[in-house]
Image (cartoon, helix red, strand yellow):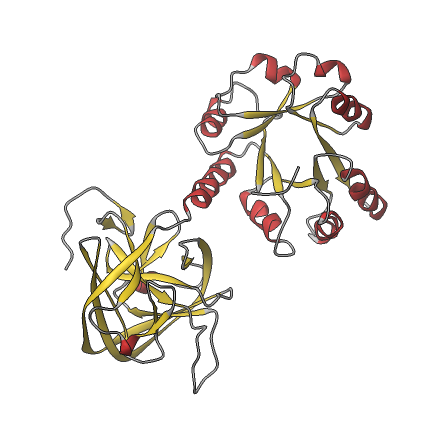
Length: 368
């Protein structure tokens, strides 16, 4: 069994079936894999989309479980029997000292999954286990209790754990978990070509550079525009500059009135961004990821209006009027802003128009 998309298991063993608030949230969320006890499995009703992982204490509890499912236990003899009966197996490991850490990865390689809990909040043990298991087929899950801890687990050693076992009954944390899943599933933008119809100088104005806390690549940037119905792909500052160093953390985004696309299908005015804000970084394939803003640097500069049509809809962006500003072409090659001419084809993003405080609304809004 190979490793792939991040695994998220919701641990329902400590959540009473009468907690309809939590179970209702889980059942109507993107969460698909739920850990339950053998007793919960017999007495509970779960949606058809739910893949149950059953935690068992002894071999007798394997009786009646559908074949091919996953069994979780901290007892090796139970997992051996489950394996003999054709079940996938997940070992639960508690690590509270150096010896247990060394034993954990040696045990983990024997099973399809390994869920690991640590006694201290440091990420060092997780890093060591990730390194030990990187060439194995074992899927490594870290037990976490908050959405923030989950994101940290996914970022350790850049690749992170293969998944998490999310344990906890805090309704706010469960909500944040479901928000994370919805956000992660939605982070792909359908980009399209935009035919440039007009390019003109608009005089002086305030433009902002959005500096983030991560590094972008040459095929990444942000979606920036003057209207809520879509924006144009403005490149990261990762392309040749003859007189200064590159700033791979930066997008010289445009005039301060502009929208910048953000997570959860939202937009932010550039003037509303500040240290800690979240924005979307998108590549030429439309794959998007969340970046944190570290600084927004606003200065007065000459500005340039670039207007065009995409799928019959008019979009525009106003950027700094300078050769070193790059706009992504529809062919995936950056164009110098001051060299763009009517007839050129750029990369753009279209969405349903109409926003209020950055959130999509269904009302009549006219933007020109």
